[in-house]
Length: 256
Image (cartoon, rainbow, N blue to C red):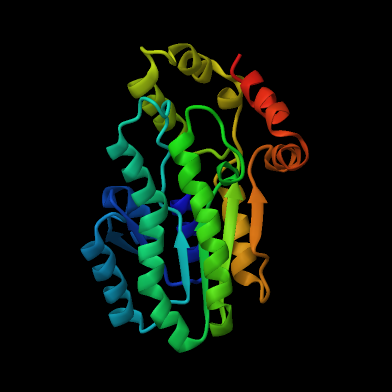
């Protein structure tokens, strides 16, 4: 998803620095005229070095898109606490630290757009995804507080909430659930997750989310949230109006 956004921004004439742990997967960004930076969002020196380089070379940062993240799946009873902490470090704390490093430069120029890629998983929860949902619920709250704090400085904070989107997320998440919970008390739930039709259907391409990012960046007054991906609207509509236990039953029915 992040790579698709980077390539589209390059085609639109933006100066793009793409940051990732696996720089070898970023060659097409370099081919397209961008810069690939080796960054681990859990490693403060690499974050500091990346922002420092951009400021030295460009003198400013206009847009920050926080798209790093993964899904730590597995029953909450089974997932080691170290893995839960790492989920929060990547999906929330890394976002917060990178934002913290960019904000002084955006405040000085009195302009900036910060785009946080959240998920409808920050509005609803599903079994075996507790740590992932915790990180995304937290990112939603973090973004709301940040938006109010930085608005006086001409900085917009935008949340993108994808539902199902074509990416590496699903196979990695299922593998995590199997690693921690496929042989214990929650094995039946993991087996149902693996064969669920909700995971098997074809997902919209990453470009569907890229379009939302571009829409937000080009708007003088962007919305605070953009919703996209497969089935996002109906799911959130049900979550808003149905009682908790009724919604729980609907979610569990997808795992039968």
